[in-house]
Length: 172
Image 1 (spheres, rainbow, N blue to C red):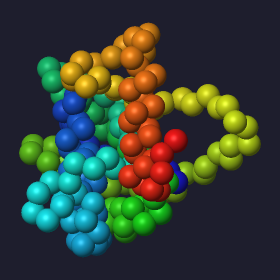
Image 2: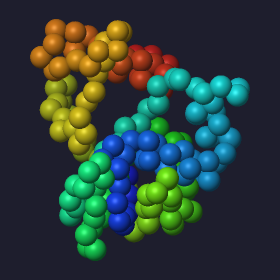
Image 3: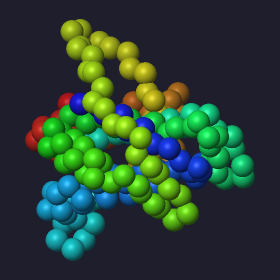
Image 4: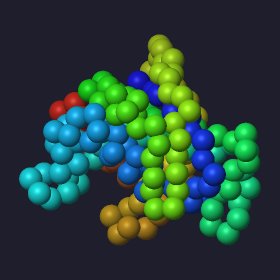
């Protein structure tokens, strides 16, 4: 399931991953605190288990100034999230509806609209995907791998297997 959330913003950090992860957490906490706690905490410790969602941030009509994206008056930021977990997306969607304005450090997001995106039906065993964000894979030593690296496919399959195992109980 995929959703797209459209925001208005004056500026964002070039590296906005922490901002949008905080937004996801705030939306889940607002919608269902117990679900949020179960997903991100194990007792009082942070839950390091892989999460079954991915997202991309697509800024529109901006310019770069130092380490920030600065938006023009008619600008928007698109946040696209994809997950197979209906409970997650329902809690997230309900939380997003309750957060009209979100602040993270010196940055502000104003909710413009949210919608569920149509899914494509897969009928074949082999498909080609277009990733909206870069796929970042590290090896066990923490070294980032190039797609041409012989370790890349093995590590990608390892991560995909782990995510599926944590979500549905069995891997690839």
